[in-house]
Length: 239
Ligand code: 3SL
Image (cartoon, rainbow, N blue to C red; front, side):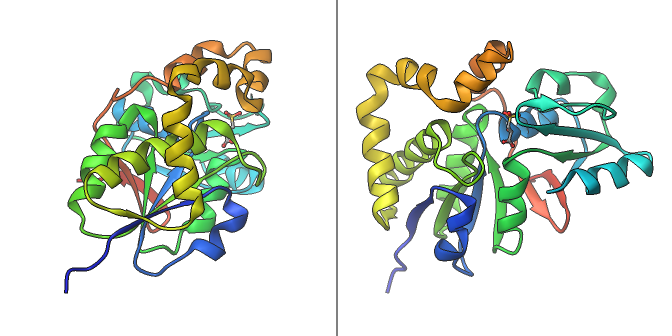
C-alpha cells in the first residue's frame, strides 16, 4: 500500500511536542529573521553554523575564539560579531568559517526539534529549493514556526501556508487544522499580503528599529538554492 505523506503545521515551538513524530522532516521557520539570515550566511560561503539557545552558550563559544552572532528582541548583542540581519552575513569574512548563532526564537525552535528525523531550514529566500527537496523525499513534513516567544506570528505562519500549498499540489495530504488554516489564510491574504505584513507585530518591531530593509529582503523568493540541514550540533549545507 502506498504510504500517505502528510504536511502538518506547528504554530509555536511550545506546541512542538504535540506535533512531533519520529519519522517526519521538520522545517524550522523564522522568516524575520533567523532562518533567512542562516540561508544568506550559507549562500555567502559559511561552512557550518552552530545554533545555540542561550546567550551563555554563545558567550562560551565567543570566549573559545568562534565568530558568533547573537540577537535578542531584534537587537544585536554587544560583544558579538554579528546580529541577525541577513545583510551582516553578506561578507567574505564568513567564507569557510564556522559561526555560532543565538536568536530570540529561531534557535529556540531548532533546539526544540533537534531530535527529529531531520531538521532543515526554510525561508522565502530558499522556498523553491526547499519544496523541491521535500517533495522528492517521500516522507511526511512538519513545518515548525518559530513564532515570537512561543506565540503565533504572521510571517512564519504565512510561509508555512505557502509551503503547505506547494506540497499539497504535489500530492501530499494536510493533517490537522493548522495546515488547513494556514494554507487557506495564505491564499486568501495574497492580495493584501503587504498590508497584513506591515501590521504584523514583528514587522512593526523591526521597522521601529530601522530594519525595513531586512523585512523587504526576507520576503524575496529564491535568493538561494541552499538548504541548511542540522547534523548533530551543526547546521551544514544539504548536499
Ligand atoms: O526570533 C528570532 O530568532 C529573530 O529572528 C528575531 S529578530 O528578527 O532578529 O528580531
